Amino acid sequence: MNEPIPVTRAVDQGTAKLMPDVDRKRAWLLTVDGAPQSYVDLDEPAYLEFEYARRLGHVLDTVAEAGRPLDVLHLGGGALTLPRYLAATRPGSRQDVVEADRALLELVVEHLPLPEGAGIALHAADARAWLEAAPADSADVLVADVFGGSRVPAHLTSLAYAREAARVLRADGIYLANLADAAPFAFLRSQLATLAAVFEELALIAEPGVLRGRRFGNAVLVAAHRPLDTAALARRTAADAFPARVEHGSALRDFIGGAAPVQEEDAVPSPEPPDGAFGIG
Image: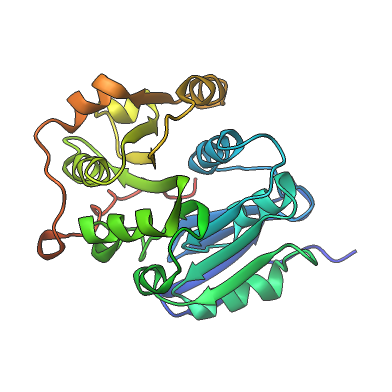
């Protein structure tokens, strides 16, 4: 039987590489310019390898009763890890995935095809432009996992963007974002302040070492107009191989401190990760 071999291709925003996992028969790691972007197990789409993806998965598991189909808008596609996860865990969900890098989407669909009838529609478009054209009250969940290279683009960080996200979400909808920062957390605090200006409820999921300022790392932001099940989230994230904390309420307000919502003219990309922050060992 032929062993899977790595695939390297120039895409719109760099060089993408698909590498087979030697430990899992039909699992693949996607990198762009050497930075890990996604991990997919075609035989086990509910398996989430990356810690931040597991945390996003925990939120997706707790936003509604188990198995209930959801309407989900994904900004950022990668190898379509979370859309596959939702198609497996919540069959019948309707999902739209917006990915600016058309060549990357084509590579992923060619080598890591979606299952038949997955209910996942792919769109090669700018995330902000797509969001602004999307109908109001059309999504139960909006997942923002957009990185231009290794940074969140500036136009996806402003108050105007957050208001568009809230417009597209239904009244009981959930906004989810994967961000990355390090102490003193100027970017992360500004993003929390921006979302707090639009949504009533906020939670932040991150490893204690990141929150204590020991290293650069991912943080998952959750925002909604309704109370979040932070107790269930805390139980799930604490049980992971790399446990995370769920911050909310007064602790999160203290963390935000004096940070102000980001106006359009002041928006900046997320910080450049230090060398090796997300490298592959």
